[in-house]
Length: 373
Image (cartoon, rainbow, N blue to C red; front, side, top):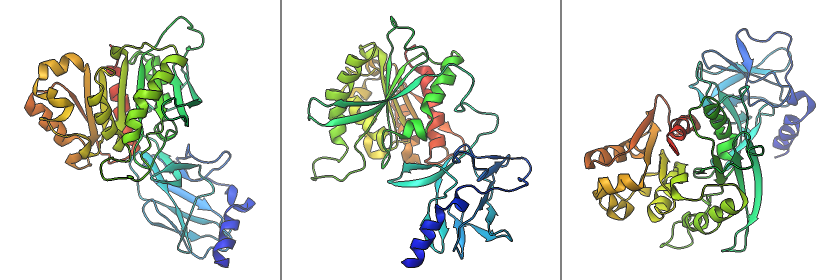
């Protein structure tokens, strides 16, 4: 225990905060997720990650990204290089003397129910989520009181470029839901949703829109056998979130200017919320949804999928996506069932990605241009 405490303190010592060196590996660049001023971790064009960190008192160091073992050099730095990584956003730990520790040179993020060090492996020649020299919207931190419960709630709300200047303009709204053991920060921090929209809007590929990122309440446990633990948010979004947004922002309030989408368990919530509230949403996006969110062609959307023409009149875009190396239950099977039933929808499969944010970033890039046409 004493040894572990010494290691923890050492991790945050001055020596550990910034690993300086005279010569950096050729054709590498510092990761965008590094703390300010840190040269490491570094990434090369093949997606290999280079580590160099000083951890006083360490006897062994391993990186959980692909279990890369670091070795101690003559200057006391632990160094090593991973195998090539696919583009995307990865959480990892440094296993120091067998104990998982954050990397003091990387920023930390809340994901999968924990605080992790994370690294963003860029996608070559496809920088749709980069910060570019284009007009940028704002991501606002918004606290408000939910009238139905009396609780204080928190949302992040993206307003598009020139929202403050175009005071006579009103905007459509996308309600964008996160996944299991994530929260309202995920889509802007890990997903970079605001930059994706900034770039699409600047290119004329997407309509300027407001994006609402609220807490889906899907990090808890069911209190009884009759109610899923995420059900409460399905009511809150209708009773509290939408009314707050429509009262505080310049929105277009009809269903034709309102969309809902979500990733993973947030996709299951999207199914549930949209099928019970088709009077509120005309656009639906489901990214790598948990399979139990969709009850089947015969019963989903109160049987309306058995009447494809009527469903198509109500739902302007029904978008299903998943990563190509995810299992069929993440969306592919539902797509095939919809196709067989003649239900109009759009299916997108992210090439070479799994149940990770690169799949969902790409899904948002494909989904957003379809909205509010």
